[in-house]
Image (tube, rainbow, N blue to C red; front, side):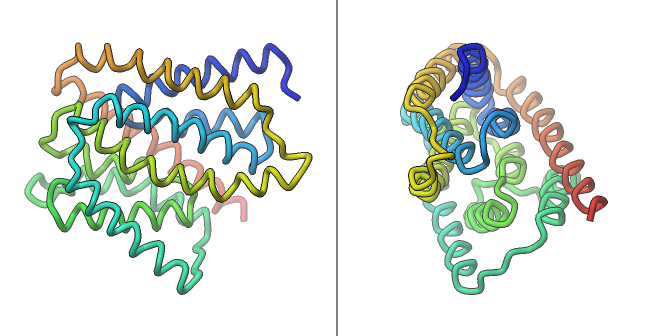
Length: 250
């Protein structure tokens, strides 16, 4: 059972990370995952993280629904379905350290490519590739944020369209995560997540998302793209260091 100070800290963490995700459409989920792993067992972390991020992304997608690029969502979902089917068929699970290393290197390599060859989720083929590659990385490494960001960071979309479309694509992934881990947590007494923690996390996720909307309205597209690149590089650096550490520790 979490103590009152820990619950307050958890609520503040969800608030801040939801605000960060709502403002840039990235980074908040990774920060939240890292902090939750300190407090809870892994299955409970995955369930609570899935619920919180599903709420945050779902509400963000609803708030910015008129800015969602549904053609991109459709292509992304198609590519993700193909990747999911292939993994279900072959059951291949690469080494986690290698997966994290690749995930960390990808944004640096992608952003170094000349503009005419850059990944852009608005291009039909790139939309399918985004869904396929992000789902594949999600299945083998458990995370795909930096890779997803690469497909958006050099697009010509407005900041509202980027945030709305990314949120919509991520809603499906977190729904699957919740559906997978909920029975596991429910079936193990030691893995329970208290209802008050879930309610608190949902409330803070909604509040953080609402607050971020006001700030997103005030910044420019130029500022959004500049800070998005900084966040992509920062989160990629974290994954890269994790991958190196895991491979070195083998």
